Image 1 (cartoon, helix red, strand yellow):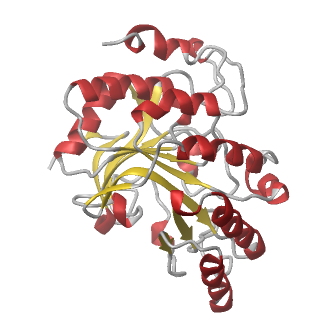
Image 2: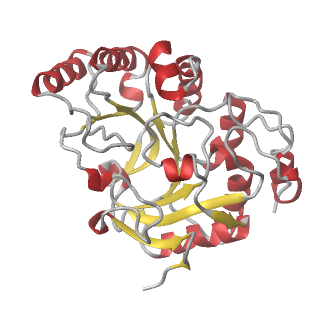
Length: 319
């Protein structure tokens, strides 16, 4: 083990500055900042998940690890049971490493850390343990994009694929959706950090290295989405993979808001072509409420798209 193994996890939580909020809380004492989490890792679910982009779900699916808490707290978060209510339970870095190895044994294409910024020091330690015990599949950092460059520098040696949102580049919409008018500035700063030394690489049809940038279209804010597409075309282009998601669902009242119209969908498709974005994915506009996860269930997702191997209410789930 290197020097991370003893001092690094605890030191990373003192005067916490893991996200741009810089709460400066000593989380090792049990106190919490905005994310609502102490220095103890809290995990909600580990699943072989087939709901990610196609290059991430080869074999049995992506080995998705869903963590409690969130550094951003979006208004329409679909994982609100985790981000706001903190569903999950404490696990050690050793336990997390064993869960990663079990996911690999069961055929996971990668280890996918979902909204885990608040636990970066412990995740680095757990990855060190897992790698020393033979973990050989790629790692995915699945993030809102609300990251600090310094925390990403800490993380980058351990992560192969960045899967980041660009929620919006409008400060007005960012305030409405996230409460943070600086979100556009943050994502513009940290996306180049993710892209650096992350040229896209595949093993067959499976992504093993690179950056996927997601954007979820909000039906009443099509122009803001067009701005994101244009910006991405100018500033990222062929260096990343663009994933445009059009199946917005309101987690507070599924189905209460309209979806994307055929005309709007055509506008978005045309904008992708005009921006020269060739590598990526355009989702069909037909989301249903069954896609809203419920982490109180033993399988939060539709059974066809998820096989749970660990759940905070049950622990390890064996066949």
